[in-house]
Amino acid sequence: MSIRRVAPAAAALLTLLAQPAAGQRPLGYLHGEGPKAWPVVQLTLGLLAIACVVVIVTSALVVVGIWRRRVTDITDIRSVPPTRAGGGLRWIAIGLGISGVALLGSLIWTVVVLAAVNGPSRPTRLTIEVTGQQWWWKARYLDDDPSQQFITAGEIHIPVGEPVRVRLIGGDVIHSFWVPALAGKMETIPGQINETWIEAGQPGIYRGQCSEYCGVQHAHMGFLVVADPAEKFAAWRAAQLRPAQVAVPQQTGATLFVYHCGACHTVRGTGAGGTVAPDLTHLMSRGILAGDVVANTIGNLAGWIANPQGVKPGTRMPAQDLSGPELQRVVGFLQTLK
Ligand code: HEC
Ligand SMILES: [Cu+2]
Image 1 (cartoon, protein in one colour):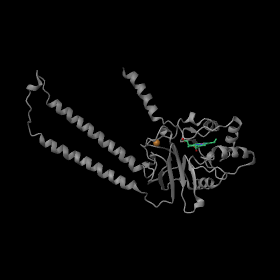
Image 2 (tube, helix red, strand yellow):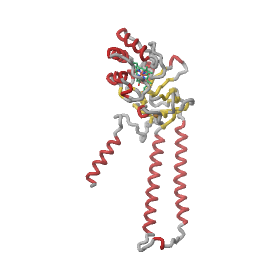
Image 3 (cartoon, protein in one colour):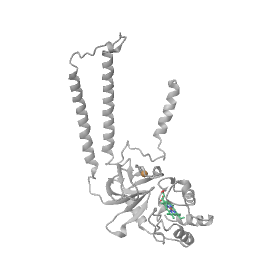
Image 4 (tube, protein in one colour):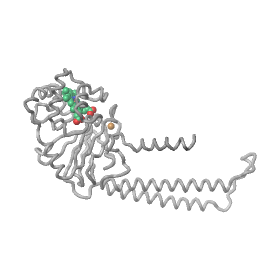
């Protein structure tokens, strides 16, 4: 194949690789966005550079060695006697010395970075308890005052520029909490509480993903971390704390919801108090549905409720027996959960 044909193909492939699946929200770990990620990214790139230098130098030495000792005129390679002219052993000692320095340097750098990102440099003011469930994420905002606690799902809001403690719970099987731009992975293990912390250096939406295979819909166990300035975060938090207000036109939808969905889902302010599925009290404040499998639009929402197995095969939500008008009423009610 000529270079003329290869070059455009390679360029197309590179653009494809550079384009994240979900538009503006790449899962990239090569540029950190917070004080926990920056030292790790530097370490990653630094070790990559060292590894490249090692490969280049070693390959060059091998090529030089082959070149200098090549035998041009042989019929049978076994007839060439091994020779060790000029005490080559010295070079082995020198080589070991050089690689020893490189390895020791990498080790020290790694240990220093691990120690630096182990805990936040300042005391944390916010702790979020995050539970991994097949195949979605629950987030409980902890507070000493129980009336200030609430539960949400799928989207974790944090104040920007502030370290946040994350307590990880395994709801069923082992999952792994991973927000590549903010922090490394940490597993959620049933029967054990793991702690990690995250901090976003600038406002934005950071994609997260379960990174431990946990069953058929593991790939659709995504979530978002939304980092907002302090006032915006406080406003979001205050809004999340409020129970739902059911307006009169939505009464029928709400009743249908409690009846068909309330055993699994909670909507605070109604009789629906199920705990095995995402809390829907403020469903409309979220941009994604069911582990980021689809965006939260009215069409996707209705499609999800009508046939969850069609959208996310194997999901733990069974289809409910709703007639067309009933589905409309339920969706109409959910649309008011701002
Ligand atoms: C048997 C329990 C169960 C019932 C009953 C149930 N759901 Fe669900 N629902 C779930 C589970 C589990 C999920 C999470 C699915 C996933 O992400 O894989 C879910 C997810 C959802 C979501 C997405 C929420 C989010 O934040 O991503 C919506 C909306 C929803 N259900 C609406 C309903 C409605 C409306 C009904 C009643 C018509 C209903 N569900 C009945 C278990 C249930
Ligand atoms: Cu998983």
